[in-house]
Image (cartoon, rainbow, N blue to C red; front, side):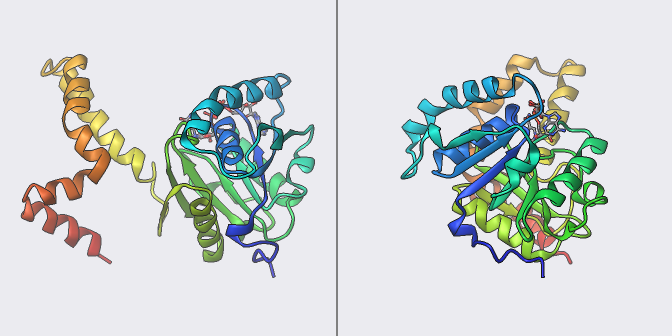
Length: 261
Ligand SMILES: NC(=O)c1ccc[n+]([C@@H]2O[C@H](COP(=O)([O-])OP(=O)(O)OC[C@H]3O[C@@H](n4cnc5c(N)ncnc54)[C@H](O)[C@@H]3O)[C@@H](O)[C@H]2O)c1
């Protein structure tokens, strides 16, 4: 049996962060602020100095937002090997560079070293778990947990499994992220770009088009978003915004589309 029997999502104590750059370091800051013990590993020679610098610069914001009971910078341990990082982990967050060959090898290595049943999540923004889990011995516990930068300030995380992931792992990871203070979308299917970036890219495509056609300047586009729809979208999202504006036809289309099998 490979299902996690070690701990429940709500009683996780130790999180391993593999890869500690911009996103891995941001995850470390988030987990520390939430009161977890964090063990980090990154092969770069200056990784520990950079990581501690990133966490120190994030800490005042986390203090202002409110630290969890027991949260402390001293709960961070930076170790010399991957095996040491994951040995006692209740959950593993991988945030290594976005290269498919590297992710495939690294996830297989993490999988081999991590205690049975512990869920392993990748921060990837571009690859599907189906592509990345091909060399892992126990792929059923591998999921994507896609954050937004910086993970200690932006709440969204998109969770999705691959062809060989079992549903319990997606559910466990989603529950864990919720317990860790994130806003979670648990996705039913793999989708290139996930959801948040797909919407962001659609707006970005239109912005590039308007600039290329000479229809608007970059300043006008930024002002239009930050003083206009961006304010509404931040609170309600585009669908509820249009619904509240009385666009019943648009809302019907959204509802019908989301109800499609
Ligand atoms: N930057 C973003 O806005 C963003 C947002 C969401 C998700 N992501 C994803 O997060 C992941 C990390 O991106 P990043 O922006 O933090 O990159 P980054 O280059 O800042 O950090 C990558 C870190 O991984 C380390 N590393 C190199 N080889 C490694 C290995 N074999 N094992 C473990 N660590 C290794 C590097 O030393 C570096 O510190 C990528 O998959 C990326 O797609 C990035």
